[in-house]
Length: 317
Image 1 (cartoon, helix red, strand yellow):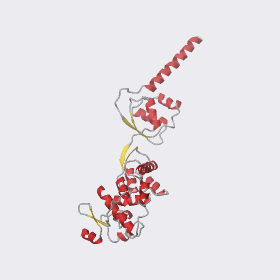
Image 2 (cartoon, helix red, strand yellow):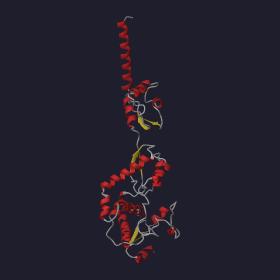
Image 3 (spheres, one colour):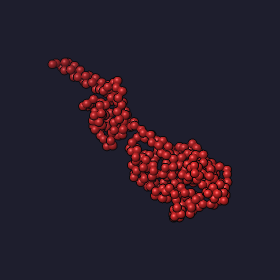
């Protein structure tokens, strides 16, 4: 074989390899497939193991060295992110790599109910595999300022194993955005309160009022009591002190020595007792212009409001 023939052979071989490589990169395993598969890439999985997982789940061809070569050529080996992915054999390698590099993992909806405490949120996140309970609670406890009251109740879309730190940041960011949109700080200052005081008050309202249309009235009672120097005497603050909530409080419960005991101490407790929703925060900012000082729970789950102690006693009977 002369030099020209050798050169032509080498050139043809390179061209063939290039065509095969390009074909492998741009053409999927099954071009018209409608199959969608959830592929879970655990934390700490390296590039080779990711390729093995894709092969095992029949997303790419078996013994696919092209995928491994491509990750090396593009220097993406350390940029492939773990998590759950929705992948299909109809996707080519560049599409798959794009998802893995961007971390386009499956997001699940998780709803944090209004009035949940940090402990309840931690338990829910743990159950939904979003964040570990103990890690979440440790993060909350070790914070310079406890986020209790500021973890805004809402529906969040997050992947599994999202992590405690990210979840706290996401919820706090959501609160800050809503606070800015609704001008919480300005409105609080207009009625002589700090934002933190409003959130504390809103957390008590959240726990006391079952129905949204009663929240402003409950707010009115507490605002009036604060103005006149009366104790708030909120059963919800006692329940917060107890390790386990009780169906009915007794006299001993009302004597528990705690700064959160609003039967013993005047004014607001030192911090929120739960994470209030928007309705409760608005109610804390907008009490009704009434002289209510008392309320008692009626048989239908609604409260009966009164302006005098004598009227309150009659309502209790």
